[in-house]
Length: 189
Image 1 (spheres, one colour):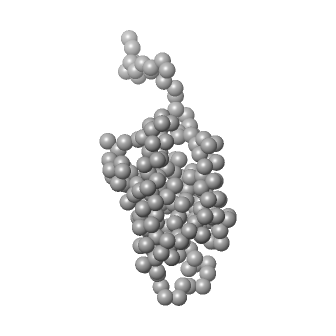
Image 2 (tube, one colour):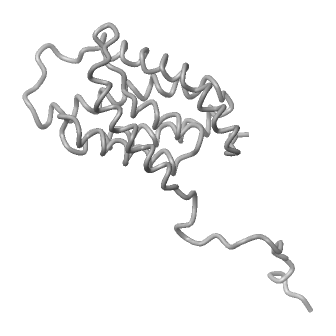
Image 3 (cartoon, helix red, strand yellow):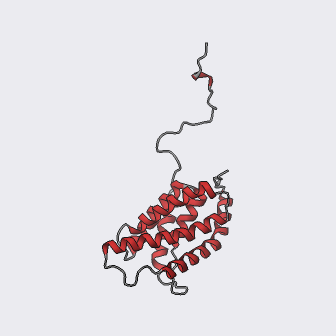
């Protein structure tokens, strides 16, 4: 007499999922995250559009998180953020911390707004840019002399618009590369 528990037959090609074997981060993804961190540290301070500098690591982290999921986004946030942080003059750990918070927010928002597959990443970059700037200002206030004049709201909003515009331009080639490489997007529905 078969028991209730033995009635389930596992498909022959289905492998068991063990702890720690979720989404795997490839060596190529680690290398690209380091290169984005280096590119951000080298190029972003030089590029100024209306006295605002783009945040290339933020754009990459939000796009990877929105298109690839939470685990790759967290890996990119930590690796790219730490690389950029080691090459810039910001307090150590502030960039990866801010990017990890943004990656968690983007992954959570993707569960609600993931159906907006073209609009959500661009809006997430704008909101993430504001979050990163406010977190960075908060950390800087804790470790350095307080800012004179308060929070520069105009620059924060201008940076969010600039980063969102860059994300809107970059999202099409990124989606084309993902489609050609055979990467499968995770839909919220």
